[in-house]
Image (cartoon, rainbow, N blue to C red; front, top):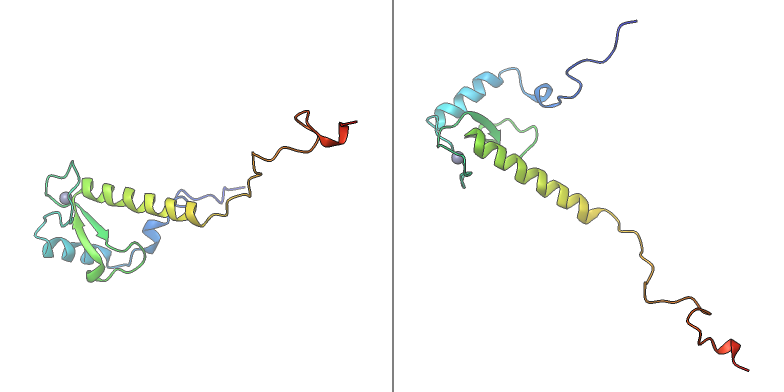
Length: 117
Ligand SMILES: [Zn+2]
């Protein structure tokens, strides 16, 4: 029996790119003159763009939502986005109700009024 598992299963990214992605990408690169367009350049950025990046992550492949980045700046931006997403998840996740550590069950501590006389 052949395996149903495809090696593309772990990559969602390429499925979402449009068929004319190469043309769009070339246009973004030309618009940027091949230079990295990051607002704040990452430490390892040499100013030369190599990656086409979605400014707002998602499926919007319009030129307005695309910029040309160096791989260093692209990586830094992706890391920032991942961190932001993680902190959002942390904030929205319900915290379990903690028992008040200061409350001592009755009878513990040796001064229970019930044992006097
Ligand atoms: Zn850069």
